[in-house]
Length: 138
Image (cartoon, rainbow, N blue to C red; front, side, top):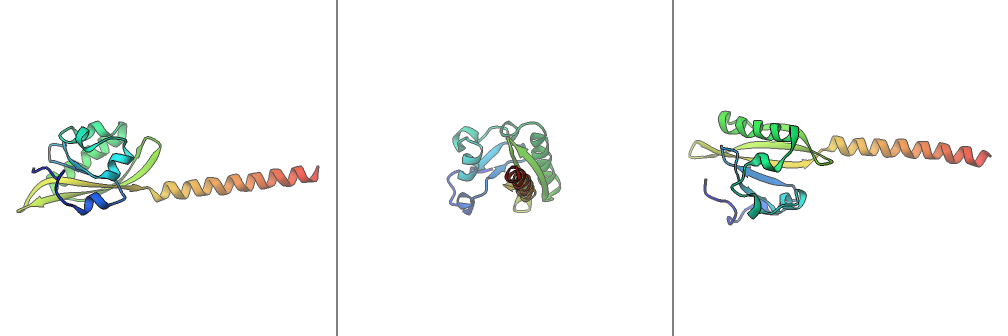
């Protein structure tokens, strides 16, 4: 697959991390948002195995998604955790002249995790309010 590193692309302007892999699971492109989120550089990652960028269960999910998109031409949605952040991932096939030549993976912050954080914040605030009320009664 021709390298996308120098190709003008809207992917470079997305705020969400994006990585493109060939059917063998090698990185052929990643956008600046991916570089920031994963503390890496395009030069360090291109040509390397996509699996090297992820750990544990996330690695397995990413590789399964690349296989599904390249082998069956299906888009796949799933969730992973990278470090301490939950992400939703959409993996979609890339086709050229009817041939599947890779996968594009878009990672976004998991809204369920954000909702969970807000819930915890509300619960802590309620608990602190109860503590303050008890202290005032003393």
